Length: 167
Image 1 (spheres, rainbow, N blue to C red):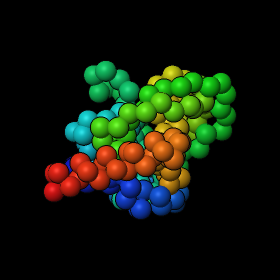
Image 2 (image 1 turned 90 degrees about the vertical axis):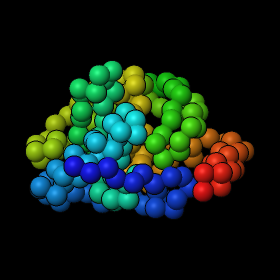
Image 3 (image 1 turned 60 degrees about the horizontal axis):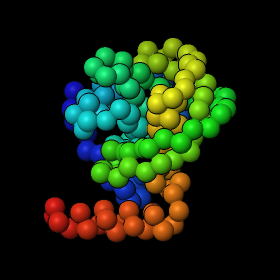
Image 4 (image 1 turned 30 degrees about the vertical axis):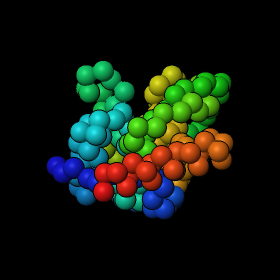
């Protein structure tokens, strides 16, 4: 396993739409393992392949307290959503930024697992938010793009300033 570099907003590669995985093979399973290791090390609760500059529809999520609940979603698609919730979100690609975003309260997602077996999952609360957030990444959208243009510009300025300081 290897740690993968995480792209930082506003890197244009974060806006690349990921392509479906044609076959779940050893290469995809290695990507999943590397993504999980990267997510845990960061630390985070979700990571989309787009964030590590691999533009395939692969997501790893673990919302458990003890990092024992790794979930893998290959070619995920939300087939049902309802309700509404406002949650404060953060993102490994937008470090140190937390903002409120409105999402569906409940989702049903269809995907393949790490063995290529299809499954459906119903989720609400934090897991539903995380699934929506990560699928947005696969579609080339970062959570801060739900915010007003003023907030988005302030975030870009803050991140650019932080990047100059650490460079």
